[in-house]
View 1: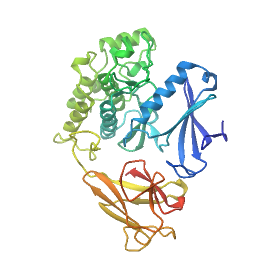
View 2: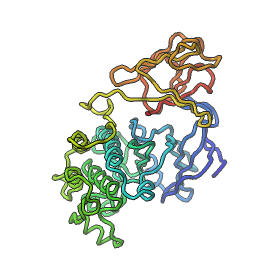
View 3: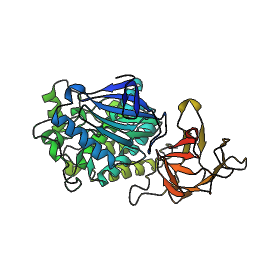
View 4: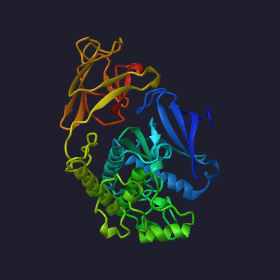
Length: 403
């Protein structure tokens, strides 16, 4: 597949393989309505031997339906679904970072601050997904990519479930009674018993297991025998985090253990409640951590904290970055906050301001226009992952990223 062109994308290298698919990094061949030319993306390609297998294709279609509903700063962004007679391909955001399972394999236990920060990013993404009626069902370190300390993207909604009422006509929930979907070490007791019954509290449980592993460097249940592993999960028999790492605060330990209670009705009611418990711990006297990854506007009732973002040129080799202030004017004029010395850019081309907790882009009657995801705009709200182009030249295309 390396070097092949699929749709508008040239495949460059393989980065992963699963039971149903191969995952590649590629680049756009030409500019499209959504992306500029030569833009790095990820392609999840259904294995060739499964091309004619109806269930496998339905699962790919379902994943595309789910991803199309999600647009959040801590969830990998979905761009396109290619579905034809020969194959099915999901085109998604390429995230430069390290999967959390590799961080744990390399470091062992992570610092408390890093563990809690990653957990809160993960939980914010889950609050958003659950609010859309979507349960992930495969939360684990391998499906979390750390972009920088304390910030992650949640990936792989391949076995996610759309709750009843959340699915549209024709959408199929692809689960079977007695068929184990997920990674057993991170699965809740109810998900093991009946995958179709796994709800939001099952994701809460899995998030608790991930936090336990980040804090201790080991899994709470790790038997090589599947029957013994499942029995331990049912019983909740595990070592307390402080038994493995005595320096862990007892209050933090209590939060982790509550999230992992075998009975769903004894856990946190929601991912938001779990997030809030960690936030309350962060505010405890004597606990020193980096600033919390504050919940964004996607979560009703969340604290409104100005988020820090950067415009990053779509070509990584250029290494051009422009941090945004609360009011940033973009243009060729040296008095602008962001100076772009390109002939296609007007002297005062556009303005980006922070309005409440949202970034707003406004074209300042530029000669060549301002574009968001290849659509010309006069004014637009920006979201993480948006591609902003100042003028007609793709060289002036920038991705909005969180710092």
